[in-house]
Structures are given as C-alpha cells and as structure tokens.
Length: 214
Image (cartoon, rainbow, N blue to C red; front, side, top):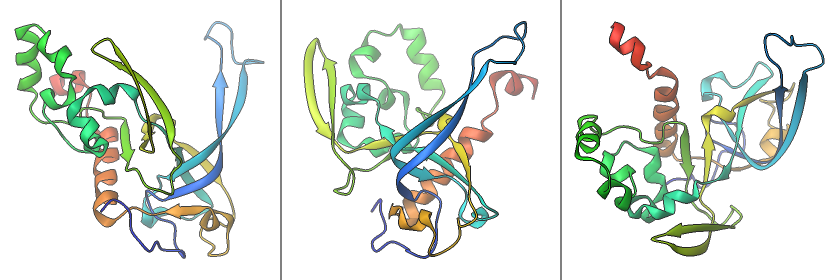
C-alpha cells in the first residue's frame, strides 16, 4: 500500500501531497566577472501538486520544505522492469533492471562488467515516484520504443530532489491553516520510509573523489 487511507487531517507529514502550491526560485544569470548587480531574478511556479519534504519531527518554526510533483521520465516506459511498476525507481535495483534492454545488449562487455560490479544501487538517485491513484490527474506521455511511436495516459508522478524549495508561513502547524486544507494524500508508513531512505542517501552519498581519499 503506497497511500494511507484515511489520511491524518490534523498533522502535516513527510511525503504529504499538497494541491495548488506556489514555489519560488531564484534565477541567477551572471558570471563572476559580471558581478551580481541587475542579474538576479525570481521565478514563481504554480504546481498542481507539491510534496512536503520536511521531516515529520521538524515541521514547524514557520518553515516548510516542498517539492513539485511532476510527470515521470517518459523514457522509463521503454524499460519493461520499470514500466510494470514505476515505484521500483524508489528502491535499489541491479544494473540490468535499470537500463533499457536494447541499450544493455549493445553495451561493450567491459561496460557491462563495470556496471555489474556496482551491485544493487539506487539507479535514479534524484527521483522518487508517487504511485498512480484516482486523486491524481492523468496526463499524456509520448515515447518511442524500437522505432515505434507510442502514446498513453498515466497518473504516475515523481519528485526531483534538486527542485526542493522553502516556504515560510505562520500557520504551517495550525490545524486550521491553509496547508492542511491543501493536503490531499498521505504516504503509508512503508512508502514514507522508502522516501526517507532515498532522500537520505541522495544527500549522504560521497562523491568518487572522497571515496578515493578515504
């Protein structure tokens, strides 16, 4: 079970889906030589769905981290292992499960050996997929497989941890506040644990140069 039903209508939790949320991003179009003056702007982006990414125990203090819920990577539909269940992106997998079969078959043997040597890993480190459900709007996906153009409708969605932004409000924890009124879904304990594990690994995985030093 990916979603909890009924949901908690009194508290916000990690992984909750909020509807109609506005996200604010800075846009810096400059270089060190140019300096920063007159080169910084902001972008307002209204998302149909957003996800709470503040840990449950840290929600409060007038600050909330959120991330837009966006359409999934269309190329995953060319991978039979993922196409069968897109939430597999949330869990570790072996290289052959993560790579489209035709691409794997055309890889050099040395490249295959290097991939297999990595073992099971989070293949799509920055993404977490939300399972399809009737409360999520369907959208059209066009993709190509074996030179054949295909199209389908789905209501799988995903978040990209690189798109996390922060909002400030005086009523984040209020049970009469706007954020609880926007809450439409809550993850099950197991799904929330998977989200916690993956985002934790996203931030904790050391770069290759650090691994060499260690």
